[in-house]
Length: 270
Figure 1 (cartoon, rainbow, N blue to C red):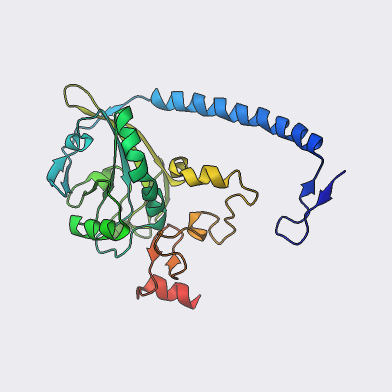
Figure 2 (figure 1 turned 90 degrees about the vertical axis):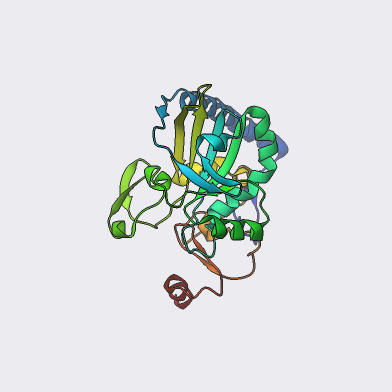
């Protein structure tokens, strides 16, 4: 016998006996195990990617002074960089990047036990980064690549001259979306101090680093991202801005209510 739930968004969802549910659950369990094995296989293939030696001498502004890329490892062999969307002059960081950053402090103590350093890099000047980081209460290291080619070489920052043209992002040419875009890059440092680029992911690849999605994906309503973007931009905000208004662009850039930029005015009028 099957009935349905009435009066909710999940109206017409089947309701069955416990035995019927167990049978359906076992069928899904087989699929979940397939996915687990596939994830293991893809993870192995990811680790087996060839590496590229980083030849350029990138230097970053850090709270403790100027630091090379090799120095950002802090004595460990593996470095994960969050390319955080915060451009020069931005009052607010990308809300999706902020969403990921809310995971970082709690993870870092555990990542250190696996020889991993995790930091954020943005093109905004260090003073602007520090102002936003303190406002959000984050403790992780966040450095500025301002004045270097780092963001451009990893295809997460774009020049004003590229606006309105196609740009290279996520391993292909696509329409210009913003002067800053998100991504994650991984590096390895060997015993000689040489640094190698081992992996980068962009766009929806960042979802793999959001623990909250693993929780939402098992909930009856799922991610509940119903438009207009069908992504995090539909609902996620910096954690201190829920219920405070503001708008989000499709690229993830958040505008506070008091923002007077053209994008905010257009969003408010729409």
